[in-house]
Length: 188
Image (cartoon, rainbow, N blue to C red):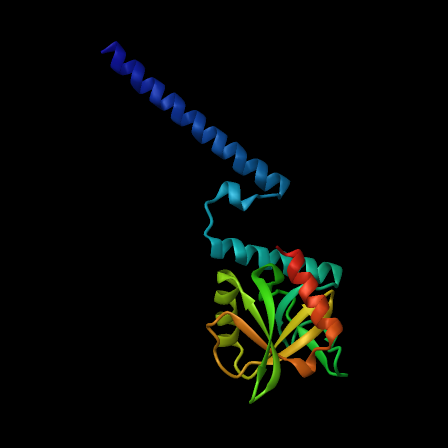
């Protein structure tokens, strides 16, 4: 009987300690306002990516500089950039749709129909985000920003699930293609 009572008390003591540590960790994170979501919660990859996009949007708004990646246009955004190939101004949503770390490589292709085109292939996460971006932006522009400048603008006409963005080469000069290749290589 004493052994059983001792086991029960031991169980409750351990449970109380675990609960106290969890509560202290939560309170500490709340007070310091620095929650490391990966430690406190078991987040899915999609949720981690969403949080990374939200954090990047806040940084973009605070600094006024856009990180490298794909963006959608927004009529309400305070962030404006001029397209380097024209005088056209775009209002950009501060939240990146796809980060450059999800873009793998560029490939130049000669086609009979469109002439020389540039294809940017993406990893699995980038392909998933590109599908969503094209699905939600039919008839709108998606904007590629590198070094805080718009270097490519593509009008979305169809949903693209391939994970490959196609850019017309006449809209990119050699300097921009080299810059883009350089950025992609530093992501490796």
